[in-house]
Amino acid sequence: MKQRIEGTGTELYSKHDVERHLDLSAALDVVETTYLEGARGRVLNPAKSTMHLGDDGEWPATNAFSIGMPAYVDWLDVAGMKWAVATWDADVEPPISAKILLFDLDRGEFTAILEGMHLTGVRTALQSVVGLHHLLTEPPDSIGVFGAGFQARFQIRVIDDLVDVGTVRLYDVSAERAADLAADLAPETAADIVVEDTPRAAADADVVLTVTDSKTPVLEESWLRPSGLVIALGSYRELPDETVLGADRIVVDHTAQCLQRGALSDLADRGAVTAADLDSTIGEVIDAADDPLGPAERAIFVPIGLGSLDVALAEHLRTNGMGGGAVRTFEFR
Image: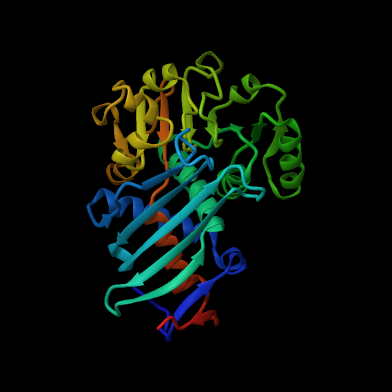
């Protein structure tokens, strides 16, 4: 139920607004509820629409792509969309920009435009937290994180805040970048952050989390423990075929979308993985309260990202997170 008194014009939320007012525990509840409602058929979430702008090696030669992520979330009575553009060769950090638009179907108006990258970072990390909560019997003692970029910072911060993890084993192809990230985060995290010299050392963990823009596998199957959880968050192919095909369970956030983009897409393109090979969505896991992994099982969790989560978190922030405080508005009409 919407709590905010509706004003006139479209509300505008900066990155600063989002950072200041988004509570992680409340945001986790929003993500879990939206996953659950999706499994029960009360969320509309088409697969992402992707426009390649050279990142696939084709024309135009700009090494970029854009994605559109529309959604309708019934339990919040909101429609919306996130549009994100990645420009890998641009001299900007992070190389992805995003905006989230919210629409009130009763009023017939756009209600808000939010800066989308901070919300995306938090949402992506919360996806991992949901997987840790529902696919494991207990918090992992160690997590190996592959990648030390924009998303990795959110992963470590948010997981550390919401999950009792002992050690984070961090690896990046740039040792300097990994060391810088660890130094930045160490004063604010309870978990020990160990920068590993080799990817094999980072893979020696209860949970392995890949959050890179690599288009080739970032680890080898032989490096992984026989059981545990692998969370693949990248947009391209981060895992070797053997790791995916040998998994005891494959859990995704959106069946069609995960066959089109992310760790499963290359295998799907070759016909080696189909929808029939996927065990469940994370929403179905939450809804059925499925048994978590057994001590000898390994699962692959591929949450490639849902527009419904972005829209739900943005609407939650708009109606609750700001505490009724003033925001900037603009009258487009």
